[in-house]
Length: 394
Image 1 (cartoon, helix red, strand yellow):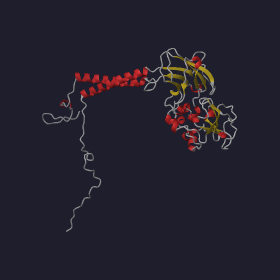
Image 2: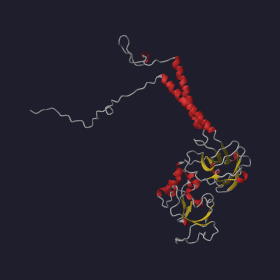
Image 3: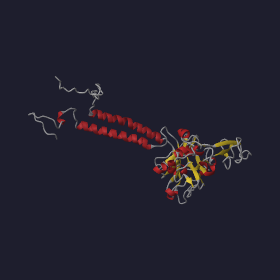
Image 4: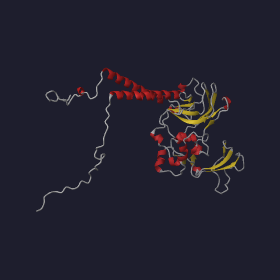
């Protein structure tokens, strides 16, 4: 006789018989007891308020001076600013002087501050060729489109291309020792991120240079001479004298006859030996997130005393009148958290104060009209009367 019983298949996706898979893990469900809530708010307030007060104190100890030197006419006296320009690359010469009223300990940071310039605009922020900044002479067609309209000028290739590189802030600041107390030097090296210098910016592939003498008057310092290896004339029109090394250099850029390189776009700011590795340029290429921003220009490693006079000679080239912008030169000391930032400390003080107020409110409520934990009178539903009936849910 055949059996009609059905053999059920063995489950193949049954979870393992463990506490985690079978959801048998012991759980702790904490109850928000009023006393613990009040103590929690008090604890947060006790931590945040002293921290905020200390951060405010650190920020207030930062000494900072700023002087706007270009912008809308209404920001200045009737005569306007001597540094204001109406045409880009005007090269106007002027001076900015700071009267130090509080002692400033080194290092003293020198920033330029720009207002109403939107580096974070999407079209502006993507207008660059990262491979080109790393020295590549090849350009992808898609990247070339991003760089438009500053990728070519007729048949001349712009290197580096894009809006960011070709709106580089090229005002020049130099300390005037004649009108400055003491022998103060502003260092312009080491102001950019080391990671940017190592991994994002390199001289163009094929660049060559050679020391030709201590002065550029030497016979060897002729850009038209043929090098020892017979590679032909150097691409430079004139040799470059490096004031830091007191040496004269011959240099050569590839395809220089149909390419405009950065040192040719900004001859007064970028040296041909640096190119895109110039640290002012590297700082500029790290775009700002807000329309008002600062970028580091240099560092002074000399203390400034009360009544000291610090004067800068300015060569103004960067035009702001067309977009109603402002340019300000700022000198400031630093703290472990950077420059002056009262909002940082105020945020801690605000959160701490709110928590203390909340703790006081709940404590007062608990004292005046307390609520006992697990008291049945607070259960408004699922409660039986003397006859065993349950009222409807309220």
